[in-house]
Amino acid sequence: MIRVFIGYDDNESVAYHVLSHSILRHASQPVAITPVAKRHMQGFYSRERSTIESTDFSFTRFLVPYLSGYNGWSVFMDCDTLLTTDIAELFALRDEQFAVMCVKHDYVARDDIKFLGATQTKYEKKNWSSVMLFNNELCRALTPQVVANETGLFLHQFKWLADESQIGALPPTWNYLVGEMTMPETPKLIHFTLGGPYFASYRECEHADLWFAEQALMNHAAQG
Image 1: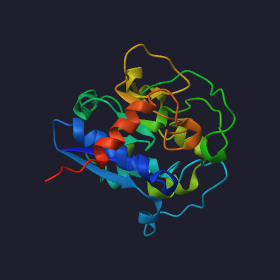
Image 2 (image 1 turned 120 degrees about the horizontal axis):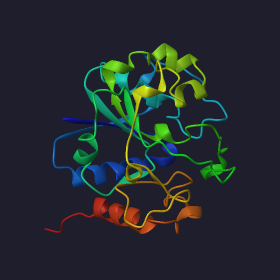
Image 3 (image 1 turned 45 degrees about the vertical axis):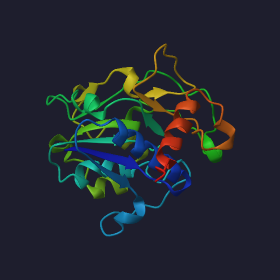
Image 4 (image 1 turned 60 degrees about the horizontal axis):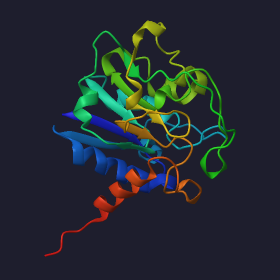
């Protein structure tokens, strides 16, 4: 069973469902998909949303190891992503020597504003945490208390790890940043980090056609 956790925000609920559809449609193995919805965590997690958090799951993504019982491996994805291939390909890249694996982007965001007027914060390891493979046993430092109280930079820059050698690298195709990168072939995982096609301002962005095609497949009902 491949456990997948997707960041959930009410402002992007359609993104969650389209991404889930793309995962299920391509999957060759059983997949369990869980929305990382902050309102589901009231019994064990409490943190007021700050002005620098562009989504409701900016910090709750780091609760995935806890939600997984610190056992096995889990995948986390931002909801504004789209899978174009079998998630089993991504899961097969897990390496037991690492605590977490991600695409190690080396860039500085070009814009100061994201979707819905959210501030585009700029920091080292930007977007590394938007798609992660968690080796949950090695991520026990990520308790609900730590996630609730530590700074955003502590969490997103992986300072909860003993050292950076515990961060494994994934190929760039597994977190292609629309508007920030170029790639001749269709990426395996497309990330609409500046704003998804479901927002009017980004309806014409790169690979928007693939997102709308996935939405159409999701909405299709067989005619009897």
